[in-house]
Image (cartoon, rainbow, N blue to C red; front, side, top):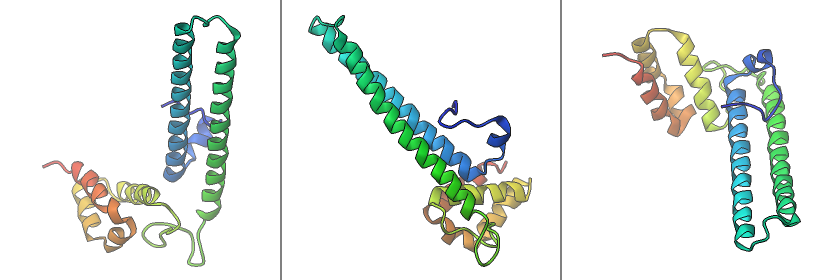
Length: 165
């Protein structure tokens, strides 16, 4: 996936947390969908104009300009929302009255469920390189079950996939 929703150099991109990276990828996917839909609308309008035998008229360029303007407006909203989310996440990722956020010592309950999944996954992927020990530690983690909710089983399946039998 080419990331062009916001301008990031390599160093800035590498400094993103897993949560921020997920936000950027989700925004990029939305942008790509908008551009795909705009292209389909243009193609449909062109087919209509060809059928009506007026494809060479200025109507085509007017339709295309209108579709492009709508797409750019939608993309700008997504971009602004992403920048706000990144700034907001950066502000509140420092911690609360109990100290800096870190799983499992002081989990961040302000995160959405998919973001919690990424945080816990990153924690277990970095805690040990032994896949079997990692899975055993995860199954003994009572906090993960309540913190992840419906994503608990998903992470269990992911971690168990790394265990070679």
